[in-house]
Image 1 (cartoon, rainbow, N blue to C red):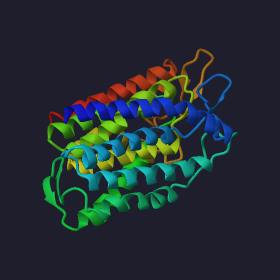
Image 2 (spheres, rainbow, N blue to C red):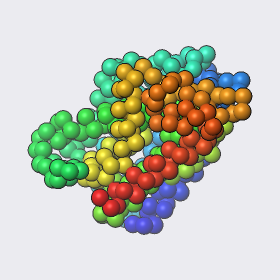
Image 3 (cartoon, helix red, strand yellow):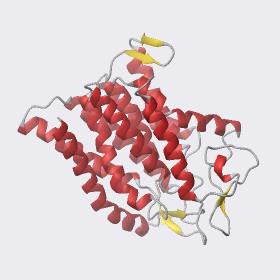
Image 4 (tube, rainbow, N blue to C red):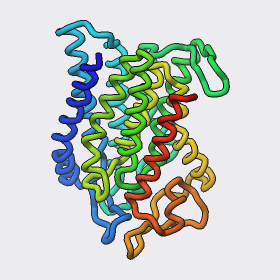
Length: 328
């Protein structure tokens, strides 16, 4: 099984590494670009990195299914893998549709409204609901184990997918942020699922992990391609899929705490304040607001930190909660 995981990571890494340059050229050709406002001169950069990540994930997971069906019997649940593939594909293209609504001369604003995003995310949960993925008994922080019965597939699964997809989407706007944090939480959840013998969930986590490792070189500062909603939706849905199929909802909730904090801060600004700041003549980022309405604003308010430094601080924060799932 360990060998399968290493092969999975390698395949997803290589596919994403190979296809991302083509994705950049394609997005440039169709003029799906936005201004990178955290750079001097505000250059236009292709947006919608989720397409390249999805290619790596699909290629590696379909290879795993092929091995399971035609080569040798493995402990992976093929039905759950197919449901996960459908969910991740649907949510990525929903995000891509949102990206397409943003004009080339915009600053990454616009797209679907706040009520349209969760509504259009709902179909992505249907595959997991249809196969009744996961178990109805859920371990929750502070509350312990609760049996939700039919409410689990009919209510909690769609809420989980929709909520997680939009949760990750609200903390984005800096080069490398979603990719860096994603590497941490998919890697940690993958190890956690593998340790608890939830092999199918681990495979999904590591497929995304491998793709993110390859994508990092293109998304880090200065980014050659931006995440877009296609990637943030994909990453959020990945957390939900791993939690549901692997029955590790408690770990997923703990590792998502940075996003819950971000949601509280965004609600403080009535969802009208953006994460994005402005760049100083020295290359540091400055917040547009006097108060903190997003986690990056903690450092932007000082005006002393560069984009890459702020991203590193947030990755370290994510790493703390990734470790916390092993001790709580």
